[in-house]
Length: 161
Image (cartoon, rainbow, N blue to C red; front, top):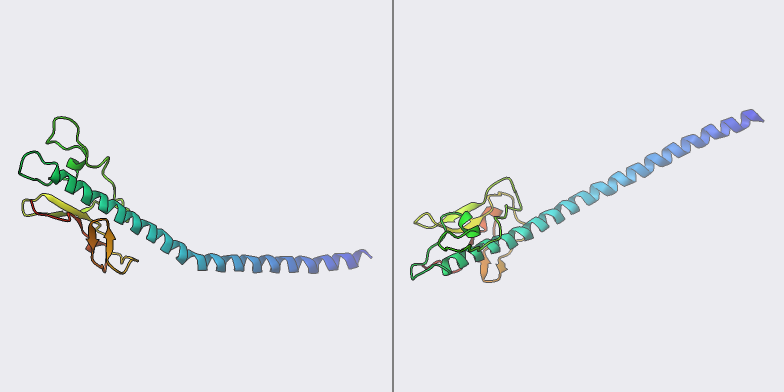
């Protein structure tokens, strides 16, 4: 009687191993299908953050220009002047802090400069293609359709000084 029970157990162990392998395969296939969807969601979030932060920079540069003392309206020489405006005796801030590029935080923002070398705007230096295909409107800022993120320039709406 003992020999019959041992042989039956060995057959059952084999079925359990096959069932575990099938479950692992199904889980791996599910993760492989979900991976690209998660990657697109992450890129979409970073793209929205880029649009939000870019609009903040454009608004801060416009505010810097509009708050210039006197009749001569100036643009900042660097982004640091948006955090601490040196033209005023008291602390004047147009941005609370300098925000990194959401697409590549290790890379600095590209600067759009006027003929005097002053900052008119910023752009991401990423060469990746955006998910958003059409023109983008963020408040008064209108961005044309772009082939890559670097094509979106977050500049003053009205650059006349």
